[in-house]
Image (cartoon, rainbow, N blue to C red; front, side, top):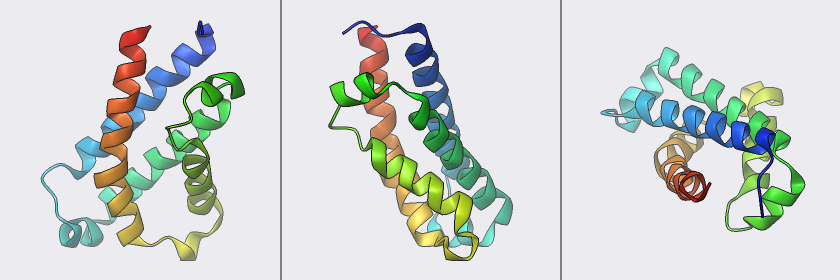
Length: 114
């Protein structure tokens, strides 16, 4: 399936935001992450960007890649944006250090195809 120019642009933006998250958490453990407000806020901000970009990807493209957890990314964005007191640092840390690197690999494969 050929990708639209918009979807290609969104994929690069998504990869950049995910790479920022990995950069922000590199060399840290959960304890330092939970103490460093600036790092937590930076990671949360980029997770918001991830969710926003995913919302803008075409439904056809997302349907062509069902192995990627598109809805989970949008759901997390909604939690971060609207449930201020409910954001759990442990959950953000786990997503940033476990899920985001997997997403980067998936995006790299897609971008290499195009």
